[in-house]
Length: 234
Image (tube, rainbow, N blue to C red; front, side, top):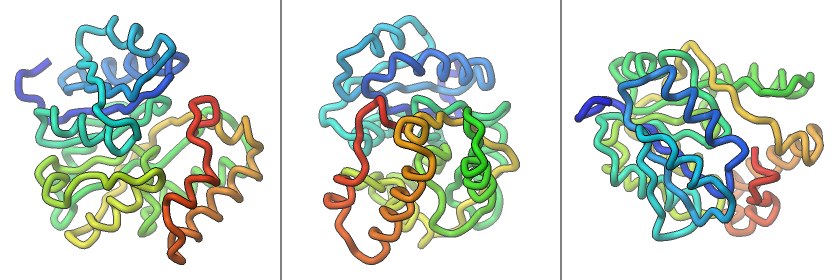
């Protein structure tokens, strides 16, 4: 690993023993020169034990529980010029570091995120995946693998301490400074929340939460509609 990496990958985790190892393997395989930081939010399973088996990875304990707090802690500790925030069950594409560098060096681009593919086939998931591969305003979320210059992230104040949609809140602040880019590649993410809760039911819930956010319902109230347990997480 380079002493001063261009890219720092920040992964918040909470009881993700089932998937964190495979995600780390993918990152290490595809971009050996990036810095990898895993920020634990108080796991009670073998997550930290698995992470500690990778000497390339820095394991931090967040002072506060919550994905926003964990990602902010990882960003504060990062040495990279760029930050990639990745969910524990999301695998980045080949040469994602090169793709991110190319995007963030385009004129007017301040941040970005990849489109999605899911690890489970279902007609509705296929539709959702196609939509995410289009760079619609306001439709870049945490499981897309959001990336940003560290300096810009700090200037906009990082993630707000919200129980849900902290990624959308950050995106809205970033868009005031410039464009968000969509690289010509996709991350592969788990569809476990859809599988556990029902694909149609979970999609309807996601749409309702997004609509609720835009009409002014508080994130605290919206979070009650979206259980944060690891077993249900997307």
